Amino acid sequence: MLVGVVSDTHDNAQYVDAAVDAFTEVGVDAVVHCGDVVVPFSVTPFDGDWAFHAVRGNNDGERALADTVDEFGTYHGEFAALTLADTEFAVYHGTSEPIVDALLASGEYDYVCRGHTHERVHEVRDAAVRLNPGGVPIPGREEGPTALVVDTATDKVATHELE
Image (cartoon, rainbow, N blue to C red; front, side, top):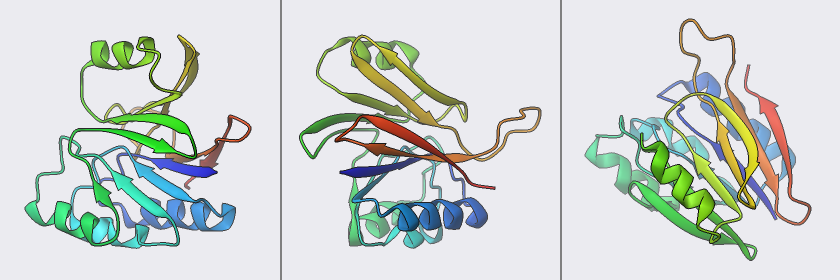
């Protein structure tokens, strides 16, 4: 199964469209958004031929966002535990590094996907893979936005630049 992972798109149509294009080109089966979609018009492009899951980010305050996601996917709140093709995913947007550490150390998840920091991360820790696709650029950082594609059959993670 191919799982697209994206985060912190913050209403940026250019990056949303680039992520959707990358996921469509690769043929993902599911998309996971790690929070900070921000408003409904930024989530509707993710209505594709895949299962869509999103967690709430700290900038996702608009009430209609949950309803929009639920029209074609699942809005999970601040945290989601997902089983996709017998692979366990934890998805979290929050600011607590100890929570991320606990999820990695728990032994319950194959992948721990996190947003919020806008910093790209791909590391193996405590037999789990920690992923953060980054987000829209933050002034002073050289790192551009990316989306990730996880192949649950091979455990390979591919990075797709969104610029």
